[in-house]
Length: 74
Image 1 (tube, rainbow, N blue to C red):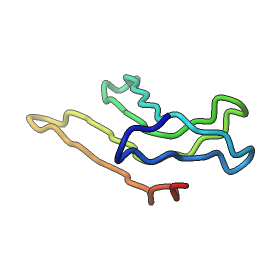
Image 2: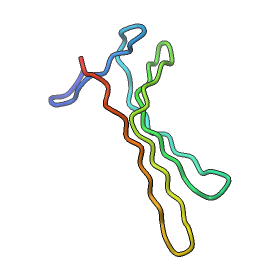
Image 3: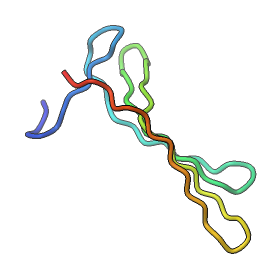
Image 4: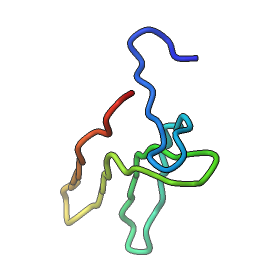
């Protein structure tokens, strides 16, 4: 059940409600990557929403974001 203001994303393959997932990992070069996506618990289909890369170069912290168009809500 959705709370007020929360939109429900349905899977394009089977029509089931999808869950929002945040996944973070440390890369071999020391940088970090976080991926935000919707995932169907039934078939595993996923819709990637955003990626954030964080790296350190010299005395600077570099943050890069890749944002994709949000999926259509139902």
